[in-house]
Every structure is written in structure tokens, then in C-alpha cells.
Image (cartoon, rainbow, N blue to C red; front, side, top):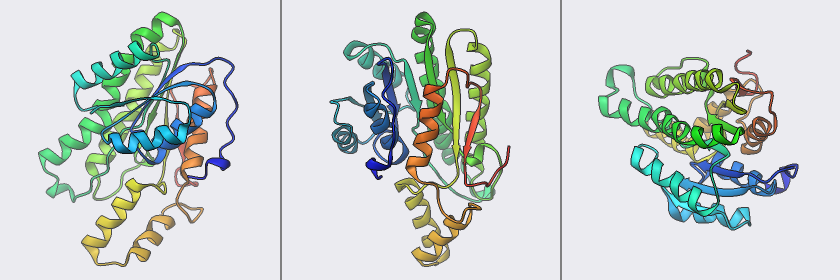
Length: 262
């Protein structure tokens, strides 16, 4: 990510922010932007080594807590650690996610459950844990990472599509329930983003089809009408817009190069 390309306005009030899935890609970019805005920062993910790299990029000595959002106990321990070290979470960026692909008839129960646990149940656990302190404070910002797959179906990713549709439903329901509390809840829904997660998807296409890596990458670029993948900075800008705007809630913000008009 080109850090110099990010233009981040310094926050008027310093808040405590937690980013899950902060070890690479979008999560790393959001963490850098939040740090640049002056917020107190906690970073979470499974890979502590990569989380430490993100922390170095932030330059603000953020709290690093390795945690697995598929565990209710681990999520509770994560929030407790943040609360003890830097205060109750006021900005939650629920970004942890995985991508898996398989034909519908070859999608096993284990495959389905793994995707749901990370992409949908993980954000639910984080929201449930974050909301009481936000409600008591009368202020909160929650942004969940959706996808263009929150909007439309696609072949060979039934579990992923279902999980991301669920994310948008969770966001809308939570926003409606919390609308009078000072808490906003939104989703950012990117198309294919040039990240390590997409690199892994490209590698699976190469392995399954025998295409060259360049051909597979061009296919992913072509899925957006603008003819290229979305950049991390473009997604980060949408996330920060959700953090900064008190009137924006219950929305799914498409960052997809014109793939879905809504």
C-alpha cells in the first residue's frame, strides 16, 4: 500500500479503535489510516508476526492482540484486553475474513461452517461485545467488511456469497436497532481488491484451471467495469468515511468500479 497516497484528516476527538484482520491488506490499510487520524489503536488477527508489521507501519505503538474471531471466548478476551490497556472500543472495524471456493455440490459442511464462522459469526460476536460500552457512552462507529458478494451471487462461492449477504443483513438489523443510541453501523462492499487474499484466489484459479498467473490476474481485473482491481486505499477511504459521518448508518457502501449500481 502506498501510505503517501492516503489523505487522512486528523480526528477532532481521539477514540479507541479496534481493527480485526489487521495483519494484511484492507485491515492493515485501515489501521494505518486510523493511526494517522490520531486514534488509539488495537490490532487483532491470527498472525502475530504480520500484526507486528502492521503496528510498525502505524507508528503509534498500537496494542497487538492475536485472537481468533471464531471463538466467543477469544473475542471476549480480546475486548477485555483492549478495555484494560487503552479503554472501551469506540470504533470497531470488523474486517477479518476468508475466501473459499468450490462448486455447490462439492461444498462440504466443514467448508460452509468455516466460512460462516469467520465471515459472519465473527463480526456478530464482535458487535455483540462492542455494543454495550458504546451504548453506555452514547457514541460508536462500527464498520463491517462486506463484499460485492453481499449484493449479487456468483458461481463456485456459495458459502462466501451467503456469508457476505448475511453481513449486510446483520449491519442493517443492528443499525435499525441502535439508531437512537449514537452508534452507527455500516458495511463497505468492495469488489476484487489487490490484496494477498485475492492473490490466494488467483493461485487457486491457476491450480484448478491451468491458466497462467497473468491470465488469471487479468480475469480478476476484468470483473470490474473500470478494468482493474480496486486498491486498498480506495477501500480505506470508504471505511474512514463511515467512521467520520454521524448521519451514515445501515448502509452498504459499494467500492466496486461500477460492478453493482445501487
